[in-house]
Image (tube, rainbow over all chains, first blue to last red; front, side, top):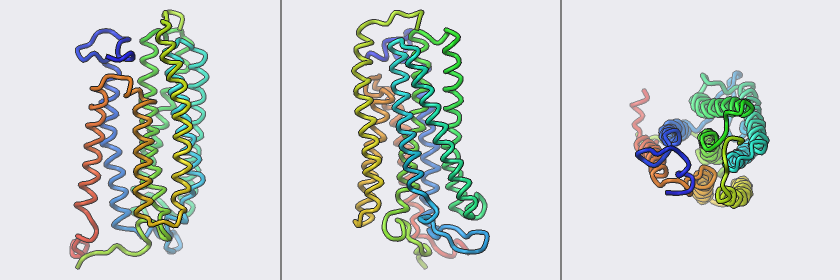
Length: 221
Length: 110
């Protein structure tokens, strides 16, 4: 058994129950996001024409997306994951002040990411992409919105943990384990975005008209 | 952490990990930068797509192995998560193959 697994009350699996249940949840969430990403990619393949705005003009995804903004928010989320790893490490070392500093950083970066997403959604809405007017809008908003909700829940969790640390109850190996479990959730949010960034955003820029093309799907008669 | 005695071994392990985390964060940032540059290169889209998929997989596994401690933790946790991941990937593959656009009959839409 590794160093990490040795710091908890004995269990039949040798793994703390909180950590085990979190990993099980993350495995199920993998399937959840896997389905959402599959749905988005499938409909991008079947309906590659983008969407029609309020004035009836055909709009293409490549011109709608802002790759600079999305890259920035991706970088922010990756760095928040780094800070979360440092926060967990600080708790294992018993450095509560360092933990608080890093968790505040994670919360701050998480809020920046959410701010970018709100800006992006608002921009897309004003460009005519709504959740109702196209297949693209439906799958895009549901997928990225679900991810954003996960980020928001993660931020709320970390804010509560930050304030909880001042009560003096967040200590010892149990406290470190609680922070580690919260960290697992946050890192998961990050890895889901790694996939979304590539599968939803970057592929739209491949070739002159995106990987899906701009024309109608080729359908066998 | 006032109510706990942290042994020197744990501190040494965490200090070593600290350096790994910094190195990994730099690599993750660099790979993301490479991905952004790649999409603007005049290379066949299918090639770029393959490279992007590979780079994403590297980032994905780097985070779960080091940041999420799977490399340090019990193997069972890795296989639990891998089971969910494998099911998700199988779902993705099945959906994309089953609903391949060039196999859809237009009568189905009308």
